[in-house]
Length: 525
Figure 1: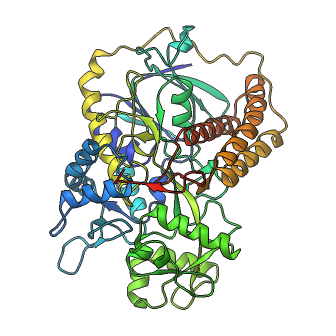
Figure 2 (figure 1 turned 90 degrees about the vertical axis):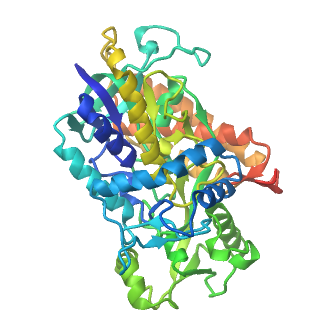
Figure 3 (figure 1 turned 180 degrees about the vertical axis):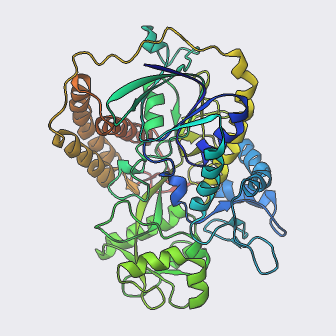
């Protein structure tokens, strides 16, 4: 079965929805969500979105903070582009209906997070992403040119490979014609042919055992592009959020926003002793890579399973008003943050690498764009500055839309694409083959490719992964497809990319810390 559209958008967070809204007046848009429309990483973003709004903040300060957090591995030209566009994109979100907190004088209440030299984080209580998703969701639902397919899994993007041609990474004419979509309760595979395709598929957190990411974050878009011979960069830079709520029974982990530390909360060990002064002069407000490594080291030295975040000294009324979600969540498991310290651990949170794009969000594959967490734009460098992610997504989706609208009328659908061939495939009746392999991948990555790495650990991880890869490919080749086997296959691709690109970096920088190269490099390099 074939479906034709002008714009195919895979992913429904801030990146996918904002792009869809910008192109929908110019053609038919098909939005693909692997779960419900709003089950995205955007929904769970607590802290906010960074932008220069008032004096004494300046674009130059925001640029400097972004470069410094990224160990100056950022593309400075891209950093300047994003920061310079920040204010306009925020105004657009507000025009679309997003409501950010204001002070009593009517100005926007700006928070501050680790690595920021000024207050520049717009927020809606402690559920900013959910508020942005709500506003975009309502606009998308109202647009007559946007069709939404929920609970639909994207298997692969379609290129010349599916026409019988040999596609290699040395070709510069690879083109995207659409994607194969598993839909209708995962019983049928639809061939979606599109003129323009945007990947906004989010992150990779579920390649680790502990993550703040929703279950849908399995690196699908990145894996699809890698298999299609596109370019993927900087996958070794995985940001572990320093403060996820320690609650082993819960997955994904509940995020304790960095804005709480910006509000005055202090990290301590379980005996109530502060420790961040040993690692950085900014203490609890140091960038995330520094804080996460500090917590990891404290836990390893003490043997404790977690550290504590202390809010008890803060004004109780202000604390509850600013962070109602955190207050309610902690209370639900017996922690009153007014009287009790919060147990926290680092958790896989954000990918700073991804599908390589240019300043217009174009990939090396023609007619294929990527924005949001699945894209490597050059903004983040070796570590993401807090609250730059939502900003990056909306800036590059805006630019992708501008560029796509210039070329879409000159692109024709490819009618030579065959439908998916499932002949001879059999139903896999042993789900344990998938679930056990998934656990093994997550254990390998968490044990050997986490916050601290070494050449020995990376080599061991790669050798273990190769066995699982072969077993999974054999199973995939003969099975009727399901989201579970496709996600496992994608996560194996992601794990391989993280390991291989970590092995190629012979230094410790930003989010990649190796015991074999203990002296960290940064902006002074």
